[in-house]
Length: 97
Picture (cartoon, helix red, strand yellow):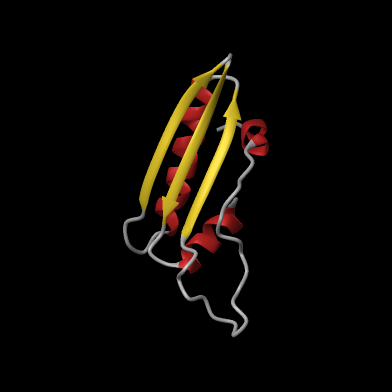
């Protein structure tokens, strides 16, 4: 994936990289959701491959990855949901991005 493409990837997630008041992760926020628009299906597929590789490098147990690429008026929207086994892995994934 080109640096330009990687720079355009914007991540949103319901799992913020915040710790609980007691300083420990409780595992309740172990999912990451990403939605990004690309100008070509090839770029969307490259981004999916990139995110998948990054998730696989972090996982201690197999994570569940659900993805969808939808074509809409000359753009392609990648929607990705990654369910890690624990909150720490989700935070590590976010830090890599």
